[in-house]
Length: 377
Ligand code: MRU
Image (cartoon, rainbow, N blue to C red):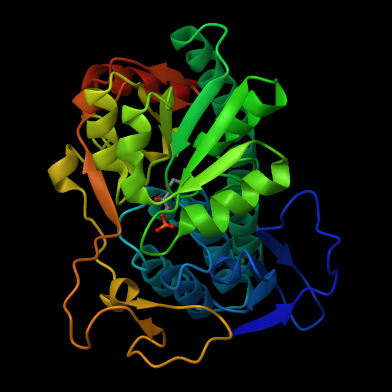
């Protein structure tokens, strides 16, 4: 079950946004999420008491973004275990909630494996539940550490590509602290550049249809005090043509073994534009996003979302009329093509930056070596 609570701290926003946390009130353990569908206007927490509620929160994008989905999936397994539900069933439901971000499976499987191992060793369900929770906490902490390392590697690469430059970075979707145990992936690089006085401007794509750029990245950029400008996705071409972009930095939901990158729909057109305009196109993602079991881009399952996300606009406190509960912006019955992600081939990716270092040029061999070395750390 999920329950919504409005925060009562008004304007006194926390420095760190508590996007996800485990709590143990007397009624029993819960997973508390910042409901990202309500940002930027409201900071509302969503309290999940079981795995089905978390599955719904994942589907509705209350909790979203590849690294955070991994963390949430792991806590979801722990929640099922601690509350005495069937863990294998909960794990299956969580893994199947969204298909593209591989981190979700990684997180779920890691917590499930810890649960199984402890159960086999001790035969004690409470000890097994504690092991699942410990695995989720470890993943959460590791993601924060990975964020900091990605930021350092990413900024070093930018400085190499454009020595002494004040970087003008274009980004798409949302990749900051809202999707991470730390400060995120691509956004963490921009944030580090900002803190070191090396960021001239962050160009923020609004990211149709669900506006993760406008609602979430602009929110993070405003909070951090960096110079940022929002643009409609279709304005990116003229921005490149005007010579206003030094680098594109995006995150990833799944990186295939050959280096193909699935990320929020609209990323691939940016890669094409970047190549035409000789601008580096850089992907920043933790090693957990690289999936050695997905051989190439064609093997990545791209989530298809409901058409009403395109044919309607939803805004809180506005009378709703459309089938999806929003304001229609297209004739009733209009069919929509609404893939959540697209796939950029490796030859358009200048570099993939991870916590274990950067790969450039992007080849299957180089990615394989990076993954092998990160497993030894
Ligand atoms: O559908 P979403 O909002 O979960 O999509 C998120 C993205 O595409 C992000 O760019 C990606 O997960 C990278 S997050 C570091």
